[in-house]
Amino acid sequence: MKSSKLLFDADGTLWDFDASAILSMQIIFARRGYEFSDEVFQRYNRINSSLWERYEKGLMSRDRVLVERFDLLFAELGINADGAGFEDEFRVELEKNPIWMDGAVDLLERLKPDYEIYIVSNGVSSTQRKRIALTGLDRYVDAFFISDEIGAQKPQREFFDYVLSHIGDWSADKLLLIGDSLSADILGANRFGIPSCWFNPAHLPLRGDARPDHEIQSLSELPALLKNVIKI
Image (cartoon, rainbow, N blue to C red; front, side, top):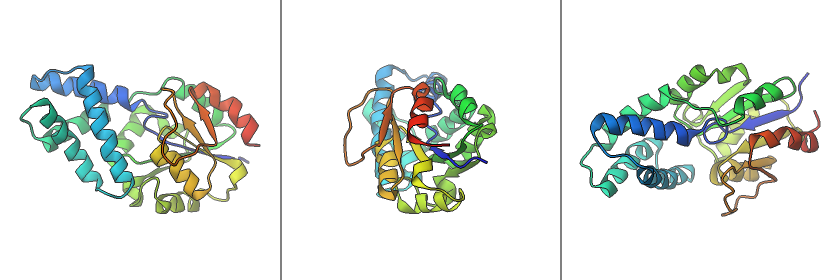
């Protein structure tokens, strides 16, 4: 019987959200006759990251994030367009174009026989559920915990209270959270006393109050790390 449990973030950890977002924006910009470039995406990414951090701190609603990110982007680009309308199109394309992070499927295949695997996501429920079905992520995962469905988000204590009350018996020496976000994944784990591993493929500097117990740059590094930190 498996006694060790892994809590995986989805976007930016198992799924390459940036690749999906770039493809989706390319499709819609071309459809609308707007010019798309790497600079446009970088502007979007900066705005989007800032708004999601505010959401994680409870300073704005998820719905406001989803509309405002494109209103702000179009204002910067000088494009007269409706952010809410663009968001609707963007959501459809994201749902249709999930992209795995390099090595994610091999990792899950390798870990599934020995560990209980759970997803902890701040994503939009309808989008995440459709992407789960398209990628077959449910073949590897014991349960999905999505902020939309719980009514709280990482790093809030209420989110982790809910997750840990639904995964059965657990102990800190047989539990690890793996995620790419310092402000959501790692800080949330810190607050709840959950061991954490920061997935940092871009080699970003550590910032803010979050303190990961471990750090990896590639998903292929995780199995060896687990052998040292979790006893199956």
